[in-house]
Image 1 (tube, rainbow, N blue to C red):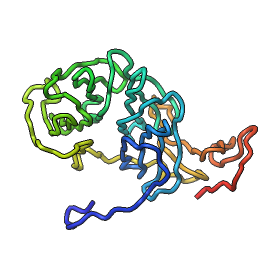
Image 2 (cartoon, rainbow, N blue to C red):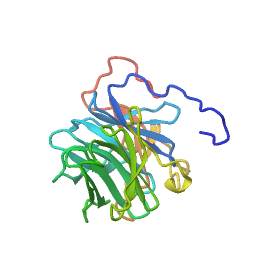
Image 3 (cartoon, helix red, strand yellow):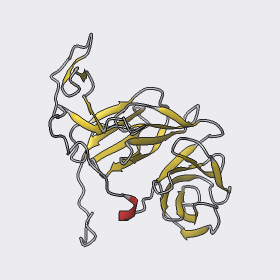
Length: 268
């Protein structure tokens, strides 16, 4: 998006989707992550639509909202299936874990506050706006309101504010992200509000793209950021397309055990 342009150019990046719900932009490694309720998957693709990879295809029922933190290598998503939950994993498809699994019903929108290190979400059945730290601890209920959170679908964070859209009220609201006070109606009589994004350079802090800094190694298919669990964690991981697995060198792709391709494999 060019702020000085009078129009925005669009292009078809990924085809053959099921029911795509949420999308998140990795502004450092130049990848898109998305949830698909139809195929029950979470996937990643490069900005230009190449090097597509399914990261998760098990134990997903109704995956919806998704957010990424490329500075630390983690992806977060909500699932309002039965049982409802919010999960966390490495952006490379490893180290998956539950973040929130109790007192949660219909988690739709989630958003990260990278400055304070917290995850926010709305629950459209419990009519709540809540938050936890990025390890799932220190849970707080910010706001409870059947009127303001009748059917909240998406939220975003900017500075001291939290904003959300409500599908039933067809409106956009805002409040203080710490206390839930100073609630305000920002826009009403919307057609079919589904999502919103706070567009500002402060929401995308700069970081190192370790995949661009490879000097002696290279990935045959795709390079993804690894979760930074401790100071010994690797910075990146090579991954392979479905049907192939990493060789012992951690870079090249090979056929897995008892895997036979039914058609030519495309590594482009």
